[in-house]
Length: 544
Image (cartoon, rainbow, N blue to C red; front, side):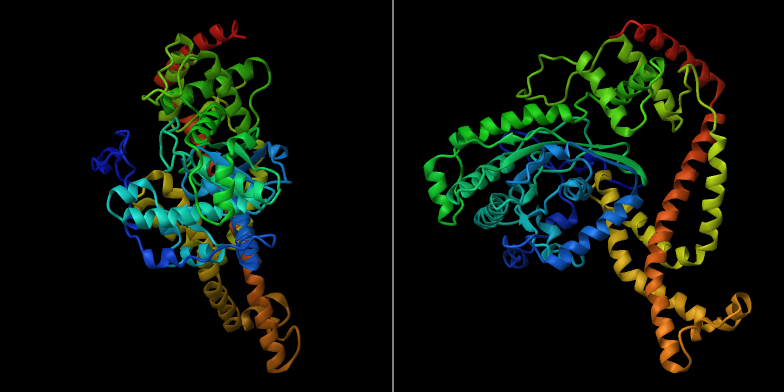
């Protein structure tokens, strides 16, 4: 992967606090104000803010692709979401488009959406986002680098935030990221005020219509290894933060009631921001480094095995790591401090776990590869071989469909994901988009090629099958064309099935690769790991 180094991307531009502004990709630098100003506005009269048909279709496609892209999909806390009022979801932002996608797909209501300006103007993606009435937002990073004038940014952002607020006030969902940019850090960046200002304006709009005031929902977004295909994801909806009537002054209600954007009181914005940060930061890893986080995860695995209850899901692994983080981290740390990176945990147990986890990580392994005694690595599960062999056999039978319909998407997604100048956090976003648009553009072509080949070789297939498929519906040109049309349509669910099958075969490959790595684990690393695990187990025996 040729992703840019974050240090090399720093062009020295700072915000008013002196923080480095996010690097702008080529796409983010290309601001098309004429298109941005003509972005379609949503309607809040129906089930979806944008086009009903296209929104339903894109949700269906995205759900299908998510089941292929992720090995496990978990969502919890959905019962926390009130359905009698609008909600603004806020989470930390580390995986590009997929962050918003996972929040949206698991929420019980359809969303009014805001996004970085270029997502509305890109050639193919922009067509879809405009059908869904996605509203463009200009970030401080574009404004301070001269991407547009301050007047243009204020007008566009004011209109977009007012539109999002109107959607929330009318009972729809929405997602905004308080950090303002996707990143790769193991802790949250400084919060921007856009989400708080938006939900307060939504509260004012709801008050003018005598509707229930909206809520702000903090979320934990957890990807095992975000840049990997078939990684695990857990979406954790937290307890809602209710917008209170005392946070909304009468002059704000009057201003938004006239349909114009007005800034909420600063004290209300900051109070809500601090409340959100207090609830949201604990739902993120919030550790000094990813190496430290892997050590905390390893402690969860070892502790679970000692108690005869090892983590059985990704969400349980995250919760176990959080338990140890909360126990060892500095509880007096101020979230208002200028240094947002948490101090390193210096407890000897965590340091030993970090060392053991690093040995595993350097060999492409993690805590899941430990045996039940936590004194070494587990052996391969041979009971999985029959099912894996049957899947591989079926995949080989369907390989012509894979080569024509799915392989071009995989190649395209790999090229785009590995060559993007937006950093590793955008890699899987590009792969997802390649899968989505490839299904629409490549599958019709591949289906045509496959049906043409089957028609060309119909005589050979008649010998094998015992009947001529081209005349299976009826004789004559009409019957032949009807058979061709039906087979062409059947290629789409077959391609979808093939994609799902490929993902399962990939899982088998990853499991086999893990078994190989465990078998090839060097003796020196085995000794170091066993020694570290022995010390960890002795100290964990007294841990509550």
